[in-house]
Image 1: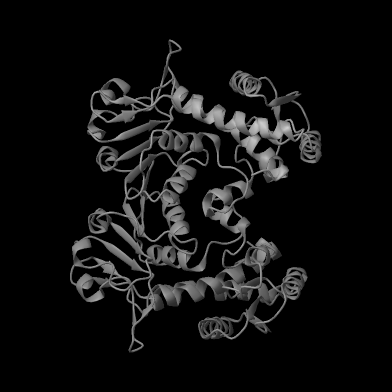
Image 2 (image 1 turned 60 degrees about the horizontal axis):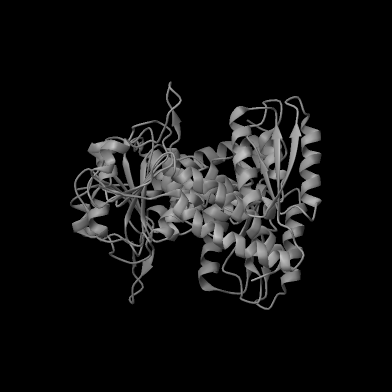
Length: 285
Length: 285
């Protein structure tokens, strides 16, 4: 049976680091603070906001909410971004997206100061991920995958890593991050032919296709480590990943469950980015 | 014997397109213009400058040279960048690099207006390549590889593409460009284990390792298309690519020679970017 790579175990380490940094900041009289900007009342947004707020509270990070009506004008939203940019007490900003269609999302996203861009929303932060330059922060979900690999000491150097999905939120950034860990990286997507044979080449699989069961037994073999980013909800409201967990668990070496895997680490990564932004601003080692 | 993918054939098409656009611009009274900024007297820089100047002249594109001494101050170089940014008659800027060590290259690179960044020097242009957003231009060499594939109608969709090298000039941008052509993309590098077996998986190989003969017969099989980006000079002054051309030519379907392949297309791509920048600025379709 595969080893289960558990989000809660990764979070223990991550949260310990966050708490230590929060203490350092508090000694300097600094209270790290996240601003969450939500436009409208999308249930998915509200749920993510609740999770982030709770994690912030548990880790000693302040959380300011800016709730705006669905009809908010682009101008008003931009002035909110301008205010949080200028507010010295706010260290990180999470803007829940997608934004309503009457707003130019690209314009609003890039109005944010990249130093406060804790979930890789700006073009500058994306450049950081692509080039390896120290600009902004990588997307929380992609980094959560790396945190899991790091925590469980999965050596990526020289290993074959296959990423299923080419989104800007997971696939492409995860590819760049695995490349900087010296993995040989393959990116698959909907146009990939014979996906099972490509995935079989992998030592490490990052599954971010967004379709349940895309990765089944025929893709798998002993020795593989599987990071399942998918969060799919079936008609009964049950969560499942992109990987057929029952099939995979009896074959591969290690796998993240859904729920209890990547998703739970993502929120901790978000909070760690806020604290890291505050540490960087304060010039603390 | 493999079909030779010749730069001069690709350039014919590319140069025809450039000339048509130059004519359109001239009808509007616009003369497309490239500014080349060179610091010091590096022979490689001078050689590239000569090639670019000659190609500009042949295609009806003006070329202004700004030659600065090796000792130029960062401040003076930044004021040159500021001047070319503001000069409405300059549509594209090529800054030869690397810059002398007393200059903050990152700072100077990013001072350029991305609309004039014809060789992907700025972070903004890199974001364009990474995300697929229409910002700046991709690196000329990476795009030259795509121009060759396009000219010879190599269908990339669903094909396995293997890129050898992970530089910001070729490897990573070419990976993103092949991904947007719907190839399944693998990136190899110095830490890749058993490179020959990885390259054998490829339908399309982009060789950008910078070492002669890295790709030999054991990596190759019939059906493959090989784009050789390497330009290596041996002790007798002979040019060769990263691929063992003699071995490859008898095995694969198609291959670019060195010289006469990618390198010669790169200069045309540079000029096409200058003209495209002018077309965009003028709002011509």
